[in-house]
Length: 242
Ligand SMILES: [Zn+2]
Image (cartoon, rainbow, N blue to C red; front, side, top):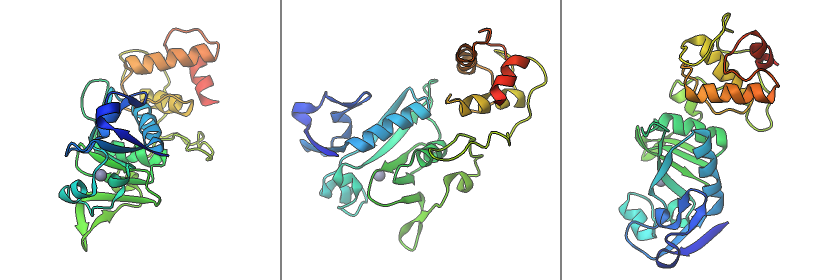
C-alpha cells in the first residue's frame, strides 16, 4: 500500500521501525512524499538479514521532474514511492558491499534490484521482476542480471528460501573434528556458521568465530537443551546436523 505523507507534518514519523518519512522525501524539497509500506517492510527484512547497523536512503520518492533530473524516465518506481536507492552499513559501521546487498535482496524477493555501484543498490516493489547492473548499459538499457550470485561469483548461502527444502545434506564446508569456540577461525567455523544459518541465524559465513557466532551458538545450545558454553563440541555438532 502506497501512503502519502507531508514532509512538514510527518517528517519525523516512522514509516516502519527504522525508517522515517523525511528519509524518503524528494531531494528537491517537495512537501508531498509517497512511500510503499511493502517496500519498507522489505527494507526492514533486508536490514535484519544483513544485520545492519543502519540503512541510509540516498534517493526514495522522486517527483517526475526530479526523477528526470536524476537520470530516470520521469515515471519510474521512484515517482510512485515504490523504490529506494540505499547504502547498508554493518555492525562495524562499514558499508556492506552492494554485491552482497543485491544477493540478499534477491533472496528476500524484492521485485526490482539494481547494482548501482560498489556501495549503493536500488531496490523496489514495482509490479514486475527486474534485476540489473546499473554500471553497464546495453543498447541503452541497464544490463540485465538473471542471478546476482552467479553474476558476482558469490557462493549462494545454504539458507532455505520460503517454500524450498533445505539441502542440509550437502554442506559446503567440512565438519570440524575438534572443539571450536570464540577466537577460532577456518573452514570448521564456516561449517558452524552455515549450519546455524539453516537454523535461522543470520551470520556472515566468514570463518571467524567472533562475538556474533558465539552468541548464535549459545542461543542454539539453549534451544537444544545443551550445556550453554559457546563451545562447539561433539554434542553441539550432532544437533547442528539434524
Ligand atoms: Zn533507484
